[in-house]
Amino acid sequence: MTQHASTAYAKDVLVTTAWLAEHLNDPKLRLIEVDEDILLYDTGHIPGAVKIDWHADFWHPVMREFIQPQQFAQLLGRLGITEDTQVILYGDKSNWWAAYAYWFFSYNGYTEAKLLDGGRQKWVAEQRELTTAVPDIQPTVYPVRERNESIRAYRSQVEAHLAQVANGSGALVDIRSPDEFSGKVTHMANYPQEGVLRGGHIPGARNVPWAKAVNEDGTFRSAEELRALYAAEGITAERDIITYCRIAERSSHTWFALTQLLGYPSVANYDGSWTEWGNAVGVPIEKTHLGD
Image (tube, rainbow, N blue to C red; front, top):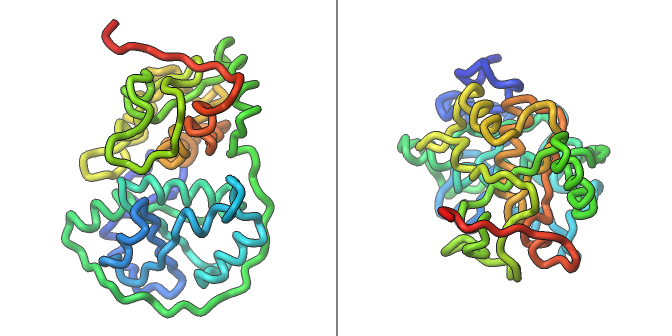
């Protein structure tokens, strides 16, 4: 079943708003909204959608670590997901957090999810139906799957990766804004802050802000456009690639573009990102001054 107009993407992982509107009543579909603003769902959401609170549902309540595979299986069970369910993820901020959820699902071995191309932004812009009704979900028992550690980068791995960046066999993609990358600012304006102490970027990183990968309506650019965008910065399929931003939500969006839409085989997302690296003792950073 073709769910997206483009056949140029490496994987069938996107659905259009038109396709979703026609399939809202499909009993095998589970629509999940994942927003940065966790209260947005309650103001109105796509009919049938359930809510994930990325902070409460994905992260350990005390440690800066994710929930474990058993807890992830319990989360899927609470959401009424079975092995026959088609999960569709969407959210605000042009799907930053939906992409983060997609990466987190993939990390925990769940590889059957898709994204609504354009997310909440496009659905609302097209004046499609929203509701405040919360669906009644019948819980299921979902099996525990094995994690895919190859798509998650830890700080020690990023430190080791710097040698690959230096010799050209590896690449680092910094998804943040140019001012964050240069060190002019330590955070995005008007966003919750994570308390990073230093501004700048990881040595050797290339700056490709996430928004360059999308059109004005929040949908992804074509595979040809995406490939050219990243190739211009030396981000190519034969390299081992690590993406990062501040806490991994924007870099998940780029991880999705590189792995799912372009099919790059070796891409990991550094979820500690600049919040960890910029506060870490003994790791190098670079600063640039744009225009110098």
